[in-house]
Length: 355
Image (tube, rainbow, N blue to C red):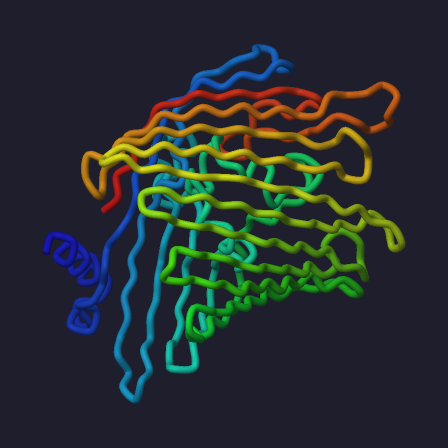
C-alpha cells in the first residue's frame, strides 16, 4: 500500500489530470553497498579501502491492458549513486529503461536494455554483475580490462521477445548506429535462445555480432553457452564463450573464457563459489583466473548481509614472449590495478535491501 501511495504521489506531481491513468505504477529499487579492502601487487600504494555503491537502483514500471490480447508496458530505471562518489545522486546512469507492447505473438521493446548475450548468463551470476567479486571481470571480456567488453546494455535498441514455446524462448535485439560515418556503420545484433524446465534445468545459447566495432568492414562476434541445474537448495552452473576480435582487415584473434559457479542455501544462510578463466588473446600467457567466495545471511526476503572474498591472478609476464602478461582487473567501481602480470585481491562486507 505504501509503495502505491508513493508512486501515485510521484505521478500526480508530473500530471495531476492523468492520475487515474497511472494508478498501476509500481515503485521498486535496491540499495546494494559494501565496504571493501582491495590490494594489487603492482600498485603503489598496494592497497585501498573504499565503499562501493554497486548496482544500487531506483525504478518505476507499469502497464495498461489495451484489450484484444494487447498490453502496453514501460519501465524507467536509474542507477543510484548511494555512496556519494559521483555526486550526482539519482542520475548515475540509465539502467534497463523502455516502453513496449505485448501480445500472444510476443513482446517488442524500445529503449536502453541489457543485450540478450549478457542476460543469458545472469542465472549463474552470484554478485548482480556489479561488484569487484563478480566473474564479469573476466567473462565477456577480451584482451584485459581495457579490451572489448560484451557485458553491455545497449542504448537506442529495439528488441523482440518471443512467447514461450513450451520451455523455450528467443530474444533478438538490434541497436543501430544512429550517426554512421561511411563506410562504417557500427550496429549491433544480439540474440539468445533459452530453455527453462520445471526439473530445474536452465540452458542458453547466445550470439552477438558487432559491425565495424574494431576495424571498418569487419564484424566482431561472440558466442556463449550457459547451463544451470537446481536440486533442492543447491544449484550448479557453467558457462563457456568464444570471442572474436578483428585487429586488421585480414587478422583477428579469438579468445575462449569459461566459468563454474554454484550456491547452497541453509535456512537463512547461503554460500556461493565461482571460478572463472580467461584464455589467451592469440599471444601466449595473456589470460587470467579468478576465484570468488560469498556468504550471505537473509534477515528477510528483502534484506541480506554478505561477506565476500576474491582473488584475480593475471598470467605472469614472460620476457621470452612479446606482449605476454594478463591485464585484467576489477571492473566494478574504480579499477584498481591492471598492470601486466599483476594479482588483485578484495575482501568485503556489505548489505542488500530491496523494495
